[in-house]
Image (cartoon, rainbow over all chains, first blue to last red; front, side):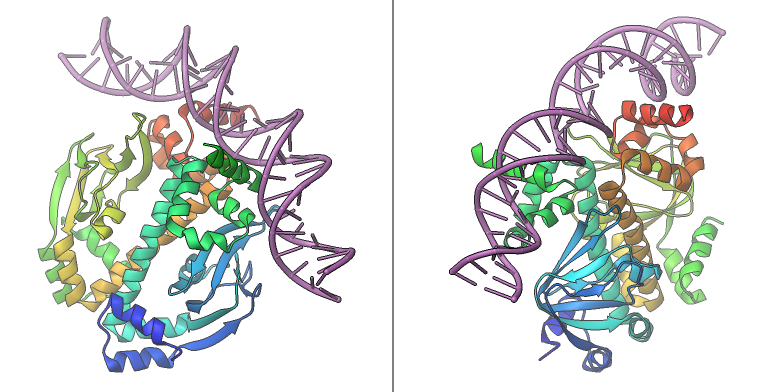
Length: 192
Length: 192
DNA sequence: TCAATTCATTGATTAAGATCAATAAATCTA
DNA sequence: TAGATTTATTGATCTTAATCAATGAATTGA
């Protein structure tokens, strides 16, 4: 089943009736994405959210010639430029598949219809927005209050398996430092 | 009217019927807060959101002896530790009135009741969560990609009047720098 | 209003991380 | 699998901002 993981995810958040689910399902579309393919380009308006059945993506941006990774997206959760999606303003990011992906797309116009029609789906939208808020607030605080070394340690604790699959220069920019700086933090850790 | 500003704010987000509003209103309570008073202490669970009729507050934390301001809250919007409110985990912040405030409190248990009972209020909750997400994402990106000087310039553009009322050391830590560094950025600007 | 306190500024030094450069290691890909 | 390309590491130097210290300005509260 294409929507099994998503169904399970939704049910973990809110009670959804069969009727509501079938209305929801009608607006979903599955798409396979190749490795390195972009599902969003800088300057485009992100008019969808996509649930990640399988695979793994990153968000990055390329102002000032240097490429900076600002987020990762993993299985059983959503990928989108949520700010662009919400505000309708052009994205400042690219979103790229780091591995072959199977994604379930839901477009904004359909989402608005669903939100207005079904209280439970509106509630689910609220819970997701709240969850994303908590995640990004944590990141923001970490950037403000923690040293680069502490941010690296926390990232390891939180996403240990993910880090195996990602080039270090992407992790470095996600931490807000250069690859050289991350390399030095790591070698320091080993020697301790 | 104690709830006039809040009513206006809510109606700008969603259509609320008279019945829904009166149910909403029943769960609100107004409270006056003195300057310097804390409405939340580090370690407490924030079980409310409060709408700011008048006044002006900040959020700060005091680990490692140095006090760091991480947020400001202004009239006609909400004040809360939203992460603590959402997750039910103890706050790592103090919230303090920087001026005498009149606040409209809404407690979590009442909010959950209202969310479940009225679709429109659930929708409003979603819109607020989404708005807060966009705000903090903007801040997070700025911390990651902008220099301290750029962050200062953006803050000036966004909150010029606010900055008049706040000691500079609070602004400095909000920007993620020391008061000395902010002082130097400012004097550099003047000389240019 | 005036002393006490808090806050802002400036200077000197230190530390963290950026940048530049060279090389080694890993990974594509034909 | 071999050559090409990408990525990681290490060293040297430079920048930005932190820290420490002293002084001057501004607030505040009795």
